[in-house]
Image (cartoon, rainbow, N blue to C red):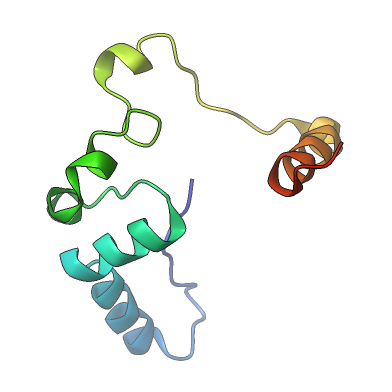
Length: 94
């Protein structure tokens, strides 16, 4: 899960707010979603996506897809195993 946050000690909180406002604009959030390949929680941006993206159930699962889903919690020491296989998946290596 990604979050946009501003630390309470931020020296330029106003600029951070402006940046967050910018990336949450529907047309900008749409572009970010298309370029990165992540789902957008911004419903106005989702409405602007191509049908093939918006209806991709891998990225935007429906309620039935989520019925038996679970949220991944901290896997602790096993993170090295996850990282190993994630890198292999990304690079196509063994």
